Image 1 (cartoon, rainbow, N blue to C red):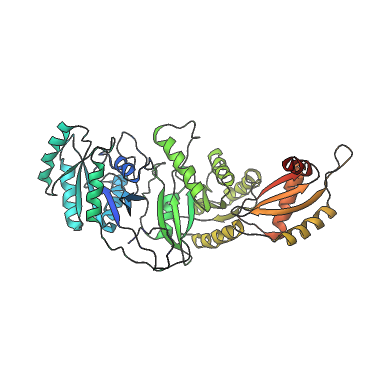
Image 2 (cartoon, rainbow, N blue to C red):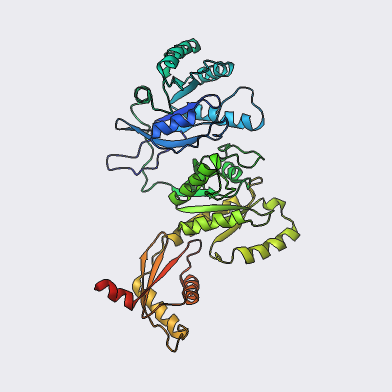
Amino acid sequence: MEWVEDVVGSEDGPAPINPVVAVVGRPNVGKSTLVNRFIGRRQAVVEDKPGVTRDRVAYDAYWNGRQFTVVDTGGWIPDAKDRAAAIARQAEIAVDTADVVVFVVDATVGATDVDEAAVRMLRASRKPVILVANKADNNAIEIEATSLWSLGLGEPQAVSALHGRGSGDLLDAILAAIPEAPVIVEDRPRGPRRVALVGRPNVGKSSLLNKLSGEERSVVDSVAGTTVDPVDSLVTVGGEVWQFVDTAGLRKRAGQASGTEYFASLRTQAAIEAAEVAIVLLDSSEVISEQDQRLLTMVVEAGRALVIAFNKWDLVDADRRWYLDKEIERELKRIPWAARINVSARTGRAVDKLAPALRTALASWEQRIPTGQLNQWLTALVQATPHPVRGGKAPRVLFATQAGVAPPRFVIFSTGPLDAGYVRFVERKLREEFGFEGSPIDISVRTRREERAKKR
């Protein structure tokens, strides 16, 4: 089974896999709204038009002391073509991997030809199915929903995902249908490391995720903006299981976006903050853009480890490589510490180098330097290159300590404020001495005057 809960095994035994509930139905019947009702927060992207959800996306849900995984899917339609076919395939995969299927029908419309085709698909899966008549916002619609008995899936559960009407009874029915005894997986000291896969639209994030996982895990289309929800996947790369999150490509700032793009931007920001390391995917065949710079800034400001992957390397010729080197020197000079890998999601070129780069970045992100060793190095550095004299005197660096990790945070104590340029010099030398490849470093300065003020 594909959806594994990221929990730590206890002394009583290894961690269980949660039962999986797939929510399926034709487009625009309110599946994502229902998923948000299940999980108790507005997590799945919702908009009043079909086709907003495109991949299958898993969330944790809790009800009456029990936990299960709910999987939101895109709209299923028979005989679909192009991108719609890929979306329908994702829904079918969700059905195949589920313990229980929640089949959603629009109660205000009744059973359509597409709904009847979906029923045939669900019967072929031989999975338990709960029929949901959504948008039953009042008693009159709830009575009309009884006509859905004709689908042959048993009694329809009349609910209003938007208002919560009947959702408690539906959750009780789900708990009654899911397996009592969860499947057992091997014990492990910690869950998979969390990796956010980010980039502007159409740089190949979903293609890279599919290449890494060896399956069609995310919908891929040449049209930019196919992915809207963050998509979680457990992927084995370099002999290790990683939890990848494929995020929406950002076109605009959150304050300038609207509708789906606005919520997708918020989800991407949240995915970065929830991750430990981010892979920022850039299109090597195109100029490094403002959106690329903004995504890199989001990762650095969130304090996450960073790997930059230049995708579509198979499209880069000698001339483009020369210009790209110049762009990197100019546009990425503020983050020279980030690991850079040239990959091709289409051909699989160098994707095996991602796992070592991720491990190095995470090791740097969690690296701690003993205080004695840190100050021995800092004393030698300051003696060799003291702080410049300003106003006839120079502040004196007293000592330093590492205040934390993930990301590494250092505090320098001095007799007065240090120039920003000198702090950058210290950071550069700190990296030369101790590494920290792939991780941001935060250095703050506390003066003797500030410390005395705190003690008062």
